[in-house]
Length: 408
Ligand code: PLP
Image 1 (cartoon, rainbow, N blue to C red):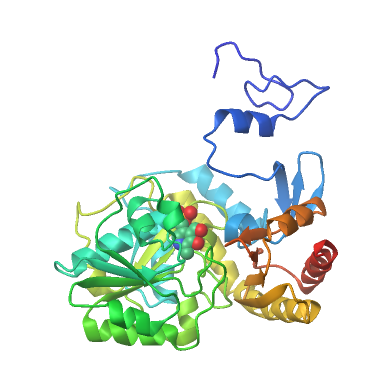
Image 2 (image 1 turned 180 degrees about the vertical axis):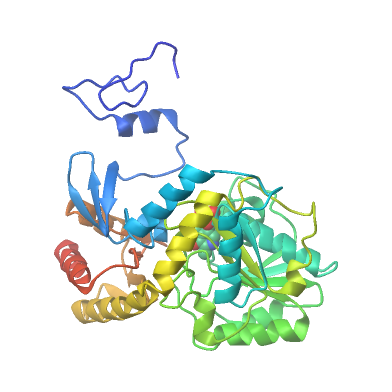
């Protein structure tokens, strides 16, 4: 920041805004941050439930949840109370010491899932990074990682190498060695790629960023068998599908399989940054003191938030809501869009829903935003709907009506 820069009406240092010309949140952000995000021209100031408000006081229906993160919506009282209480007690200790929220969250995740042990980090990419390291180290010299074309696993180097979208790797090469990409949602393609040198297969149970691509039933069970036969570890990237999004706590539950590793993040903290690697004892054993770590992992406030989220998801009935309202949303969309030539497919599970069009969906998302509905365009032609898991049927009706208004 230039020395002596003024602080304007918005309180954003350096914005030069005045009472007559308020709000340069957007212009200061554009001027002072790296330009790697294509932002919509809206600055949100607060939210409640599935509603958001912008700096001009306009109200929006949130069918996006900040990229599938705000699982309990905005300002959920139980989540806010848990964060406030923990923030007043202890913000940080580092992992050289024990603390109660970390112990309770690890215990709860072990109790609720297949996992014997949990490694905490801060994001989805970081969880995948740790999972790849864990799988390679647990495999005693095997190094190959098989993943799917069209997949998305994050932006750090290991996660980016696993990501099956060459466009995202452009200009950042060379990529990490040993990553192989195969046809998505095909167990046969995975079987053909797995060999004696394969450390792990990593897939999303539903491909999220890549267009909400739902594999055929039996896909995960088939991958489990392939991995069992070959000794490769099965890593499920549940960064997006986890934490109730598909109507179960984790998507692997739909197929009743036991993965070796599950990575998660996004909805786990309900809006605070926390990631986790859930692992079986034999793979978790690869992590010994000094082998991996992260300063902010298991942050006490993030852990307290995640505990409040898990309570609401399970005892509070939010997972059941995601399953019920998700079915309603899919049925309503299929009904409303039936017979349209420009719609290829309505698909998804729980509240991870994609509508594939024959045309680019970004213009629809812009028009929805102008009408006060926040949605997402992904993979070019897919409209992705990833609302808070507390969404109601009335809010679904409102969203579908708005969609019908913006479609040509
Ligand atoms: N994995 C999947 C399936 C994701 O959808 C994402 C983010 O969209 C990531 C990994 C990366 O997560 P993060 O952005 O928290 O690093």
